Image (cartoon, rainbow, N blue to C red):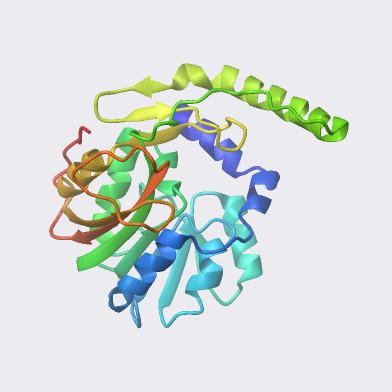
Length: 266
């Protein structure tokens, strides 16, 4: 519950909402959408964690029946205001009972929104995604990489010759330090995954990290076959080995059957 309280408070912050108002489609996202066009074109797409509309703005230009959801009320309100013609509603990925079984052909969970859930809630969300996705449908998402060489970090004071910039750096350092002081006690280092208080949003989040092979096993145990993995630069990476260069990884997975509900190790 602490995990959820910490992260939800961050994503309900007006300043954080403003950061998610826009931004380009990432290299990995674009490559996947081009390569797997047939999986969503002319079909029903569920965009989980749509935020304030970064992916909404892009996806609504495609020939899809678009549904965007986010668990942050403030994010959904902003998204709906910006795109009144798009279906956007508040919904928690852990309980998507508002949607029937096999309602969607394609599910997107972008920008590491999946990692805002702790391990057990993450598996609950994966079972729900399996349930609402049609057999053979694709689940595309990104997740932080436990094998990344700089995964673990702590606040550092940056230096500048510009006195105004240096003052700003000092101010942000103390904000990061204070957040990390409060949140680092919730970090966990399990065999299959880590929960880290990383540098995101000035150390205000708790984030789930898993290795690529660990994610592949987790998907398999929940009725998915991992097809591809991409680094942030859009380059494909192996599914069977760890990758130290990518801070997070995009996955393409196909639904092969119902979720078994098992836990994964990585």
